[in-house]
Length: 145
Image 1 (cartoon, one colour):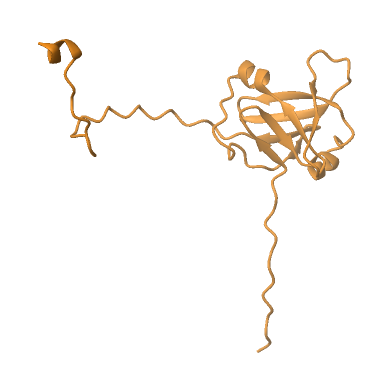
Image 2 (cartoon, rainbow, N blue to C red):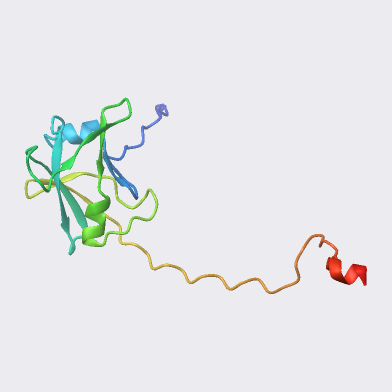
């Protein structure tokens, strides 16, 4: 039987990272979808598929979002707060997307994970307090009497 050498496999990197302030696209993902040279993009939302789409736009388009450079690797960022607000998108943490940018009807799209319902608040702690307690000091009027 022949030996098989172990080789480290590089984990696939995400094309898209989504955060509370906006969306970051990798340079390679933008180049694959012909968006590498774009300075402005239009954002789309499909509520049934829970997908966000991105397509190049002209600079004069009033509904366009600016693609800003992010970091030294050529990634670009879209400030999408108003977009999230308009469509009621709630971003919870950094893993709010599958991270893959795919072509759908001529628009580069990625899936957004639906937000989980907020957990009910914890009841206040009613047990015995731990640690040292400061001795209660009487008010100055009571000490003078």
